[in-house]
Image 1 (cartoon, rainbow, N blue to C red):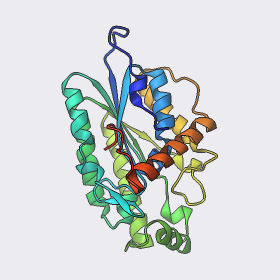
Image 2: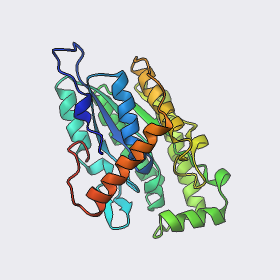
Image 3: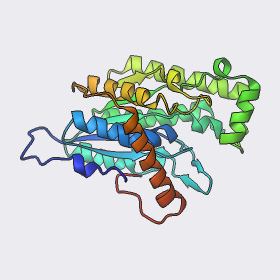
Image 4: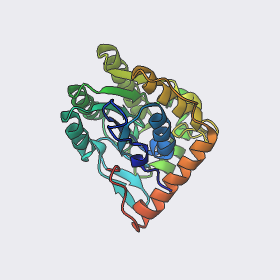
Amino acid sequence: MIYNFSHTMQTSSRHSDPEFLFVLLGASNLARGYSALTRHLSQSISPSRFINALGPGRGYCVRGGLLNFSYTPIGECRVMKSAESFAEQGGRVAVLLTDIGNDIMYGIPGESLIECLDALIEKARHWNAEIFVTSIHVNVSRDMGKTSFKLLRALFYPKSPVTFDQADAAVKRVNHYLEEKSQENRQVHLVSGLGTFCGLDKIHFSLLKSHLAWSRIANEILSVLGAAPGRSIGPGSVVLSLCDNLSRLIASDMLRITKKPKEFF
């Protein structure tokens, strides 16, 4: 069952606070944890709604995907335009940029990815949004050897021309940019250290630790927004979220039997 954000919304007659919009941007990890994260945030901040651009293999400035489907680059889809319209009406906005790194493996230079990320961040800052970014949690030179890198590249990015050294340099450059950006701007909040929750491939959160990773991200968001976090995201919530994601992938992305919900861009 796909989680419907409209169920979390309550009428203005019952709440004096304005509706809060969360803009969630990412790839496979976000797609897997999306329902768990939105459910957790909506329990602490209400009324709230969510829009997103996500999906396995998704890139910020280049098309990416899985098997027989691909996604519009996050920087080119209409998710930020929709958020801008909301902000112009006086709504409060929080933006999460996560799963950064697919572009690098598709051959996009680190500087080009940084330019795309910076444009998204600056656009959100213009709306006075609170912006949360997660660093790339794969340290190529430390976490994997050249053989492991080639195996993972063949598995997840079979057409990638990127070498071990190119990936290592690009990851370090992007992470350095994210760190500097968060230090220079009070609206930008860096969430790091998520590598401890990853599985053997060093890319995806472990099924046994995914709830811990999303609890950490969610609680950082809630802390900055001044909301008291509820109970941490549990393993059961993540399992339901994985099922929701699988349903979307099969019915909407692969077979195209159903249309995606309107909050998916």
